[in-house]
Image (cartoon, rainbow, N blue to C red; front, top):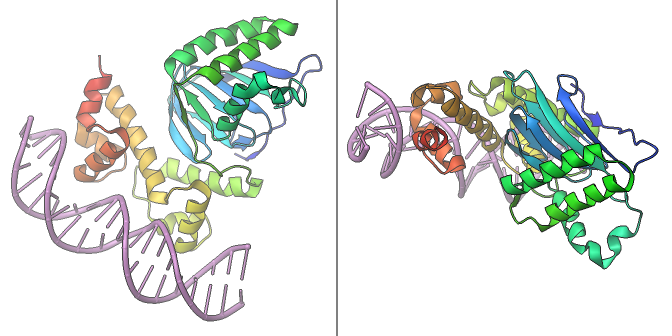
Length: 281
DNA sequence: ATATTAGATGAAACAGCGGT
DNA sequence: ACCGCTGTTTCATCTAATAT
């Protein structure tokens, strides 16, 4: 899987692109592009990588990604199909200076925040989802107004969180390749122990150089990153099956319960069994 | 029996330094 | 500007004991 700058075809008659994507037909790698991207997950679940951020996504979730923010929505292996609704638009899709007029103040702020990637709450997501569906069936000015309505809704929403931390933006392709390799390796091997030496070898660096590099690029240290991946996997196992906590612990790459509990609580703020209870019906 | 907490200990993150 | 080495600090993991 190669990382690259994605080129998006802009149809002559419209200033932005909106489309429905169904995997396996459309699987994007770790990439970035100059357009803003609004993603709505229609179905399927998996893991999102946005800048230095990692978390699980599932149906109905809505994210706004700023220009040049590297991202990758990777569906789970078990999932046969994933579907999403995506809108791509450039900052100047309304003309160069349109954003500067006072009425656009809030939108401008929204764009600024989206440079780190924004994740919206369920209520906003549901409202916007309906508007996105409408947009797909519109043409001409109606379509444009739909997009404006969506941006308005987003800019007024108070239920959102930042995905990435600042300044992980605009890296070269080579850099992304290297990070991609590291991500790939961790995803394939998190069920076993991953030593700093190992991953440093994958990245062709000395352990100390690797630590420095990783921290620099992702603003978090390597073990923290691996833990996020492990805990997110554990969460799904806990909801999905009736496995014992100790089994899930093993399965997620933790080799003793003590540490599992500690790390789990740190990320989720609940003990594994509490988490299971909360998400079971 | 299984899950959770407390405390000890060893690995790795980090900053400083000098070399290329 | 980047790398590897070194000493210090921080933090994950382990043992053992406690709680459900």
